[in-house]
Length: 318
Ligand SMILES: C[S@@+](CC[C@H](N)C(=O)[O-])C[C@H]1O[C@@H](n2cnc3c(N)ncnc32)[C@H](O)[C@@H]1O
Image (cartoon, rainbow, N blue to C red; front, side):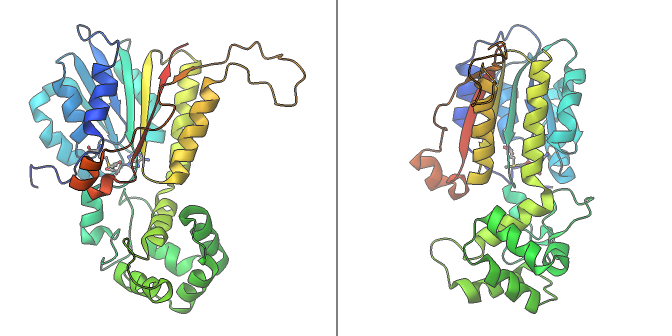
């Protein structure tokens, strides 16, 4: 495997700025940083380089990403712990691993890596020779099964809900009538016929996004991960911890924005309540980014895949 990273980390300077430079952390004590989407370690490497007292727990559901980062991080010795699996199923484990040391941050850079997109046999690409799209190749659900086995109605719903696609009914119908569809390239050509040719982005972009989100249960993952963080904070297992989430489409960004808003609320009485009966002491901390941090024009010019990235931050502070 090549040692150069196959993925350019997005908002790298901003991540270092927010988590290390603009932070009140004590770099003279042993502290933990959780990278919930380790990938090829671009963000984590910079974080680890900023102090020898920073220990890292890196989670990824893709074993190829874990193996790549294991090699890349040999130089950091035992400062790094790797967890293979989803962030939703692993986030609680990080508390045990960190023992009584402070967890200063949890970062999730959600979505697919460039290597996943570019490796044709992973089936994420418009030119793929197959339909796969699993981030963890041990999972059962593949893009092939979604495209060839789901009912027309279910496909339509997925395209509407996860791709925000206007002509989802027409596309679902064409897919069902063209079965079996065996590859990403067959599927993208079919969508191209319906949606017309390129208009800056590929006409099948949102369809591929919707299928990928379905195959990997991405919205449920994010929801469950954030609920677990909230519960850990409520139970005083996390404090003075910065949570940073980078998303790449509006569905995920909405989940993050809404959850952070709820976490910040001190009063959790229903809106129809005449007066507060909840004790008005439920805030888990504060939203750091009233507006999300987005890439500069220069970053977008260098790395076009960064163009839709949004970083939102919350500081748990009870
Ligand atoms: C955009 S890449 C992260 C890149 C990384 N920040 C870097 O600089 O190399 C996203 C990574 O998150 C992983 N991933 C996505 N959803 C996940 C989940 N629910 N649980 C664990 N890993 C996930 C993917 O397998 C992928 O490797």
